[in-house]
Length: 222
Image (tube, rainbow, N blue to C red; front, side, top):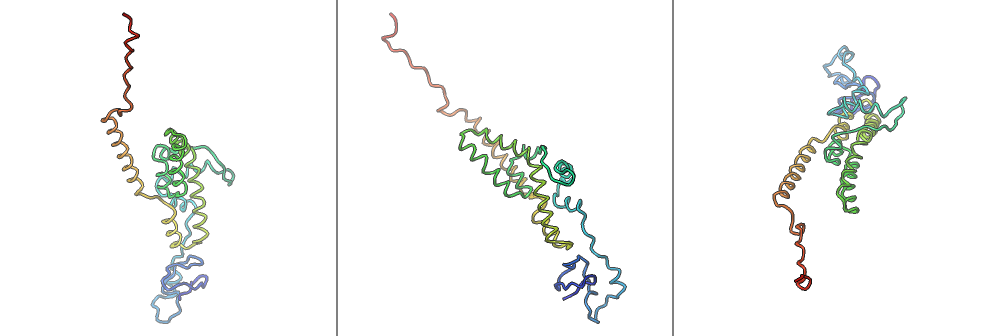
């Protein structure tokens, strides 16, 4: 079990970095006389440099990190979080629950998947879905800011300075789900195909205007 040359923390045999301080572990960290690494090479071995806060945010966000970091500045004042109105076009124009799913916000995706259907069922009006889309467009950036903030705090708490732990945590909770894009395209194609079929079929029988009944013969003047 190799010990760290910096803090002397014992680590597992397959560890590449110290779990305590993040220093790179090499063959020279053990005390076996059969090691080929010299003391000079140990001294020259680069220690792990912690990822800066800005870079960690970029890694966690993934695609379009510059855009979201610019939006996130609206939600902080003197180091304290605050709510501010902003607009997210993808969350509004795209199927809202798919945008949240794309950004790995699974609870919000569930809410925006069920909410419009329940609203339409209770009111009998499908225009309620538009209200949900507007809500998503107006709040998506703020909700995503908190998702990133809480996720990064957990990564720093669990991983400390260990890059392997940080990288694995970012893959699991950060970044995006690319397959969601193809799911959205498929749903739009199906919706477009259904709309075209409705136009081709024309109005249903029940929608046709019924002919006005003829007047009784007794009411016809002679």
